[in-house]
Length: 80
Image 1: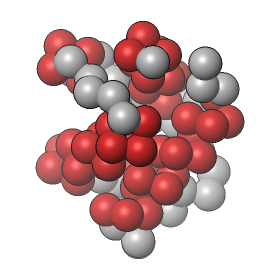
Image 2: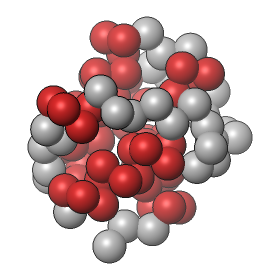
Image 3: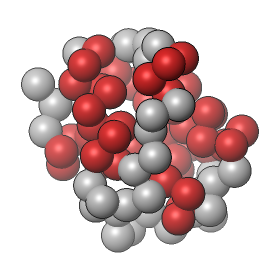
Image 4: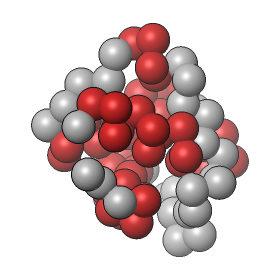
């Protein structure tokens, strides 16, 4: 089971691989992904990197439910 802290850390690493200019220092479980300034393409790239790191695939129907870090953690745990 992935802890909240581990999911946040993996997400931060994934964002940095896609865009080194995005500030990920204050991400919490309540952080809205839209607040990070990532456009839809960048968000999908981040999700792709995260999937590789976790060696899982998120179903398309789950991707549309991810609005904040808590949603992301729910999807990660569902696939792990």
